[in-house]
Length: 190
Image (cartoon, rainbow, N blue to C red; front, side, top):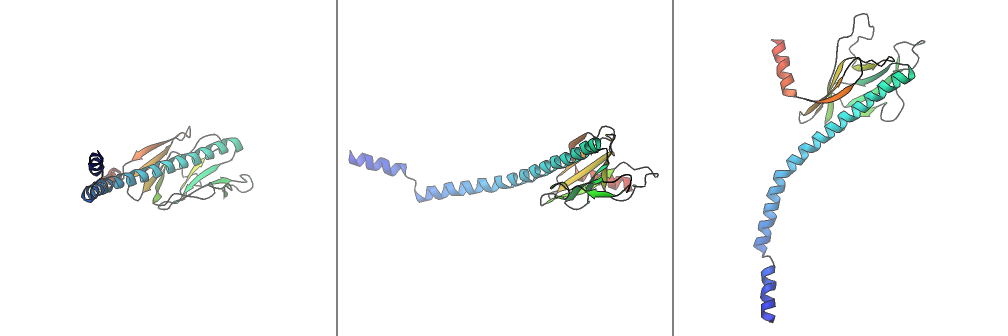
């Protein structure tokens, strides 16, 4: 009886070779899966950042309507820097914008590896003296905004575009194909 118990114990244990084979299989599988998780991690960070940007734009819209002042969502193209500013004294100092003082809105740094590719605006009229090369999206006290598309891109060339409708200031996030856009730009240049 003791011999039978001893034999069954030996059969239950893994030999060193079997253990090494299992470890090698786990290593191979994890090496194949980890890059997939890394890509999905970048994608999730990009999508969350796009949502954060939409929240900032919604804040601008709400504050413009509530305060009766013009608010701007500002972005530096090619950087990871966005911020909110407002026209503090529109009667005394028209066109002078001050960064909004609330933490996270005055100066928001996009997560590492993400940046603003472009802030594309529908052309402003020539009479509009704010038609400079600054990259900002304006939200006005009547609830309207500029027609715009803010393109956020990751270092892996994955991108999302935040679209803003002028009359309603409605925002939505859509996928942006960097390669397709580059091809369209090349075709327009010909």
